Image 1 (cartoon, rainbow, N blue to C red):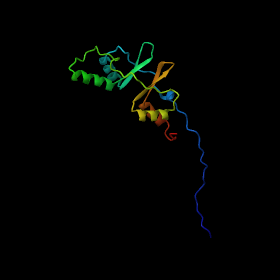
Image 2: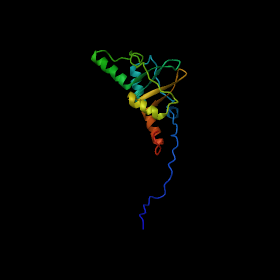
Image 3: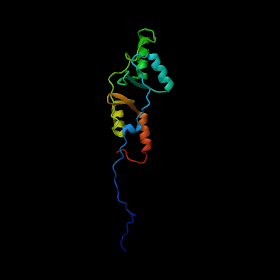
Image 4: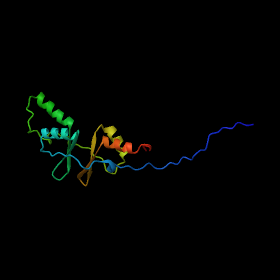
Length: 155
């Protein structure tokens, strides 16, 4: 009698294209924004109240002009103490924000966005459409997308 090697029934592997999950599917559209003339004190109070780490700065036409973060506020506090300057309400967002802001396209695949987060070290990216701020995607939004995709591949 010959050797019988039982391997069971083999199913053909069917490969299907990975589901296109876009930044627009997970971006936040109800944003807390800041104005350039706001004080750092106002920003700090808002960051604490809403438990956020920063937000976009927009002008009166809702055009993105910068980002202000906890780090920017801490730097301002530190500089004020170092140079023995009062930490009063006259210090504006405009003087402390980062004005060179990288954005992400709303039609970018969310997993390509994840790669951009890793390479940039940023915590959030604003989304612009027709020159106006329409949303923001954060690292937490990417994690939400990953949980929803459990069991699927990250292609």
